Structure formats: structure tokens, C-alpha cells
Image 1 (spheres, rainbow, N blue to C red):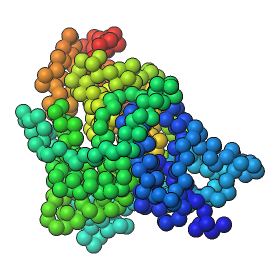
Image 2: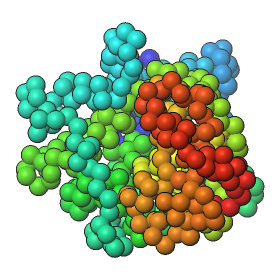
Image 3: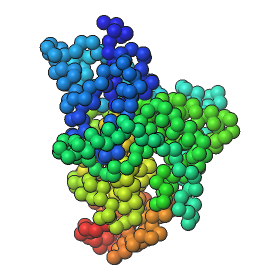
Image 4: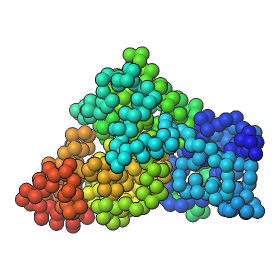
Length: 499
């Protein structure tokens, strides 16, 4: 059967024009996907809205099925299954489980799309390392050189590949926000209304468990909306993105971030198109190189990198790594996004933002949520799945390298050379969270001891035997050994029940 005679089954990460070659299409809305674990309502809403909007755009070209399970449409596993459809093709899906599902049914598979580089290219690069670490910076430089993005001949634009050092400004002092206009927001329509009604019904029937607020949809659900969001970012926030990409303010949940990760992970926005758009802004003299390079690095570098690591490291990477022996279950305050029960400002603001929007920017994820989880030894698999379920841009492929590797150091250093852990001083420098907090980031012992500052030393005490050979941790461990009140701090944090 030729490709033109096949019906292309597209998944929730393949909803944009990049995945459409003009033939017949199929979308399957399987309710069981939303009932596997508790899911943020904003994420469930966005997924359903995006699928139903895409079906409306495709019109007569699409089969749209609302079923309990995928197998209700495509049949059981095994090539001899009587109910198996033999007229389907797929662009390789975005999770191990989905890829296994389509292959078990003999569905014709096309190469994956939606990334700057191919899986084959990454495998060739990774295999050529001959035992060297698969460093992001090396991968990113190689992609820049091959694509010519932000390059002048064989040299990087501005003489450097990485302007990260220029992009670490704290927020303006005494500012409630960056002073930028609100981002462009999509306008909900009758499809969103139908989605909201269905989610209410599913929840009342006990079919799904939804967490978080039922706020207005804030993220693009169509390719046209994604283009509007990209244009708004370029016009309003790109210039400030670089300097303040690591900054946090309690009164500004979006800061200068693009909010494009969710539509990009839905396949609504071609990442190379987004890169070329911001590159053109710099070429025209309308955007500083540090901001443009920071944006390019997040997409062409980090996004492609974690996608490829998901496949290259294997399906067992998520569950087979726990180098720091972290076993504690995720607390209910996290699982229910119960910000009211949290006393420390940074955690409360971050969890509350997640409750309201299903989103937080990368420093909140890494240096507040991830830092806290690392210090307290939360189970990395449980944390990984929580990140997948609670964030609108959470996908099975995007989180393992981010959470298991970079955030929790559970892989022992495959992704990050040292644990991303810090005390309250970092949060104090990069945010306004500490100013009105009842805890003092400079205090590690006593009633007003900062849970992050004290937790930092308690963490080092707990994992010292496992990280003492890491040369990048030599200085922190030396400080731990000189800590006069080490035992008291560790005992205090062992018995802390309120944070």
C-alpha cells in the first residue's frame, strides 16, 4: 500500500501542519489516557482542545474517534489480529509506550518530525564520542555548525557559542514585575466550552482525577494561535528574555518567557521556524544577541538534546536510576498543589502558580521545585511523573533527562556533572520571594531557619558518601565538614514538619 492510500494517525504531539502531507488523517481521543494518573486540569483541557480544534480544521479529511482506548479503533496487538486495521501509517510517536503500541499492530511507521535534528544524526554523534560524556554544549555547538544558525562562516555570531553568563540578571529591585504588557492570550470558543463540560462530567463520574484550577486557557491550541504567541513574544518580550530568563518575581508569573513550550510539544509550532524568526530579529538589529542565543539554545540545544537522550538512553532510564537513594514519597502538598499549606514564599508562590496555570518557568522548576525535591530525597520516578502530569508542556520524553538527570542527579552524572542544589541565598538573589518570608535565607538553625538553607546542609550530610568523589562537590563538602552546628542542623531538618 502506498503512503497516499494510507490514513495517517496523528497523536497529540503531532497536531500542526508539519505533520500533515495532505492525505487522509485520523485522531483518536482515548479517554483512558486522561485517567492513568491525576492530571492538571489545564493540561487535560489543552490536550482535548488542541485535538478537537485540529479535527475541525481538517474537516472531511479526518476520522475523529472518541473512545475509551486506542485499541477500540486500531484493534488488538499482533499482526494476525482479526480486528487490526491495515490501512494506517504514523509518524513515529513521542513515547516508548506509543511506539511499542503501533509496532505491535504492524502499523506503517514514518520517521519522527518536530525537532531540528534527527534521531539518526544524534546516534551518529553520540556513538562517535567514544566514551566521552554526552555534553549538551558539545551537541549544541555541533548543531549550530551544521545548520549555520547564528554563525558567520565557521565562527559563531558574536564570537561565542554561549551567552549564558550574560543572562543571569536578578530581577529589578523593588519591582512587582518586569513592566511588560501581558502576553497575548487565546480567546476560548465553543470547542473549549465543550471540553470544559466533558471534563466536568468525566470528573463527576470518577473517570479522571483533575488537579488545579479551571482557569481560562492560556496556551495555544492551534497552529494559528501558536504563530500569534510567537509573534507576541518576539515583539514584546524577546529583548528582555536573555537578561531575565533566570529571574523570578512573585507578581509576574510569565516574566519575559515565550510560553511556547506547550504548543511546540503539541506539534503546533515548528521549532526551526521559531529559531529562524528570532534569528531574523537579531539580523535586523531589533533583538540583542544574548537574548536570541538564549532562546536558540533552549530549543536547538536543550529541547533536541533531551528528546534524543530519551531514545538513546533507553526505556529503562526513567526507572533504573536512583544514584542518591532517594525514596521518600511526594508530599500531599505537591500532589494536590496545596499552596495554602506551604509557609515558605518561594515554594508557595511556585506551587500556587502551578495550581492556577499548570506552568512555571525553568528556574522555578529547577531551583525551587527540583532543588527542594533533591534536598528531601523524593522518589525520582514519582517526581518525574508528577512533572509530566502537572505541567501543560509535560510529556513522557521531555521529563526524564530534565528530572531524573539534571534536577535530581539520579543518573549519577550522565546529564549533569553535579547535583543542582543550593541554599536560600540563590533564591534570595534571583527573586523577591525572600523579602516577606517568615524564614531567613541567611539562617540555618532556629525557628526562622530557611528550609532551603538548612536543607542544603542536611542534603550534603545525607549524600556525602555517594558524592565525595565528585570533584565539583569538593568545596561544598569541605564546607560541610567545617560546619560547627552540622549535627544540630541535620537533626532540625530531620524533624521539620512545616515548611
